[in-house]
Amino acid sequence: MRLDSLTSTEFAKAMRERPVVFLPIGGTEAHSSHLPLSTDSLQPEFIADAVAERVKGLVAPPLRYAFHSSTRNMPGTIGLGFETTILVVRDILRSLIANGADKLVVISGHAGGSHMNALRQACTGIVEEHDVRLMLLTDYDIAKLFPEDQRGDGHGGKIETSRIMAIAPELVRPQERVGHYVSQGFMVVRDPERSMPDGFVGNAPSATPELGAKVNAFIVEELTREVVKEFGVRE
Image (cartoon, rainbow, N blue to C red; front, top):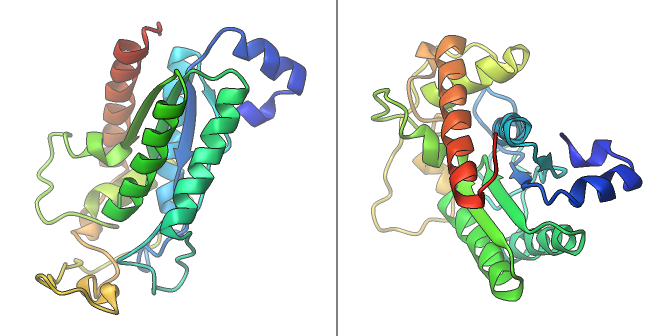
């Protein structure tokens, strides 16, 4: 259930049951010409809603902005600074805790290393401040375990395109090319998008909604299992 669909009175009553509270974090980011800018938001929100339904949890309003590095200069990428990301996420979590949350899952659809580092710093600060249990992951931590050959696949590739085909097919446009990653070695460059000249990485033309539905179901199942195990709740 979405937390912000409740009235204040309903919310207070729901929190007395000490539910697991999910915070989906996405992004507004370029995903080439075939996927929407909301790609990294649609995925964790879908997963959070599905898992919360199974464990009778609540889903907090999602944060649709993130810290971006390799795509920051691409059209449509709208992001936060590294320190801002830490502060915003920390403030949201503090507010949830002030409202009684003590079991929290932060799930990010944007899996960039620097972004996840910012989230980890925010979450580490929270568990040092408060007596709460907190899980942090990107849904791709689980997706990469799906039994499918994912070599050469990445941002906006076969898996991600398939997942959006299953979640929001009306937002997916045709893609005829295979996207490639170009390594910059050890160099720190001014224009990091040169590493992804196609705007995506992988065989997006081979994506299918059927594969996407299977991957999404796999993530929901595995995350539900983790939540039940770590928080001691029931389905």
